[in-house]
Image 1 (tube, helix red, strand yellow):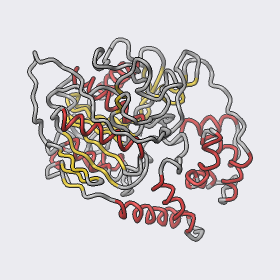
Image 2 (cartoon, one colour; image 1 turned 180 degrees about the vertical axis):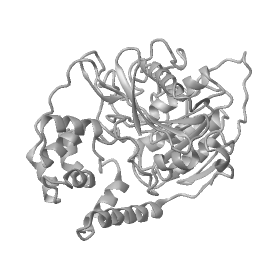
Image 3 (cartoon, helix red, strand yellow; image 1 turned 180 degrees about the horizontal axis):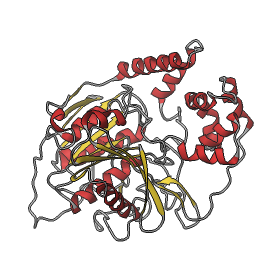
Image 4 (spheres, helix red, strand yellow; image 1 turned 45 degrees about the vertical axis):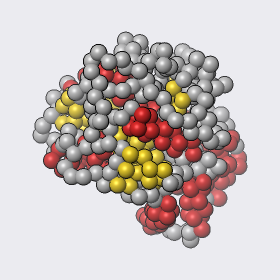
Length: 452
């Protein structure tokens, strides 16, 4: 994996890039975006419920994998971390985490259980890690940079299936060998998911008695002169609030800490349409800059560009993929959302606080209508929608995206719903095959065959 430095036209940023050694041709590119509070350093360690990492799939199918990174700082020096409460530190110590060679790994394993104490106290996970394991200021900052996409904490109150998983894990006898401990946790996780896993066949998904059709090929084509109006969704109401897979954002003014929040346009309505300003948007300029740097390597196929991400990274994907397809319709033919779909003002879904005005949740500001973006009818762009039944209103937003995209707009879509909580994606390979759609555009000759 390599780190490439670039700019969004305003500040310096970077991407993590994985280029398999076996690539001998211009390869397709898959961008993968972290959740709120994440970064691109040390990208690729996260695995799906099968234990498969995106890095291994990139090697198997010979595509280039890019880990994007949201703005980390607004321009001024970052504020110092707040003191870590004693009960948060004690939780990790009671779990056996102490200063030493395995301390960081121990803290990672116990992030879930200790989130019940540290999460409500708004302690950044890297700060808790440093307080437990001991570190110099430089090492603390390094932990901030190399922390995985889960900058924040899993919240068992809003993720009951994950809470059940944690309880199962806590009942396991203490294992001395790290590898055995990880294997036991994986086995328990699979048992939990298998008890609630839903039947999934191609473009037809059964979930809680609801059957959602998803055409595998475009069923509606729109002429160049036809109006491009955004489409909303059916109202899906549930009185439950949630947190991002990471830290909440603050209004992104200059000099304030961004905390790894993607800068998605706040106000997008029927009147404004989808906001794809390639001159003003820092995220769109960032992607253009990333593609320019990748193209300079001489191994990138610019006509095959795909996007995915989880949580706030999924929100970015839903907006960005539509913008990129509108600008380069032959390049981007599919995207995959994970654990965030479509929110329409007044639909009853409560998402995290709006970065730009945190007194409101996303999509509920006075002039807002859609988050992360309206669904704009087009041809040749497929949505692969992924979520878990224990994901609360995020899960319902994914159902809303599938409904708006495939049923209302008649555009191609597949949906995968399994058991689990926020960003507990069942299969990255399912996503890859859905994006490829049997065309070989992402997976080459290995991508042929029916989506299962």
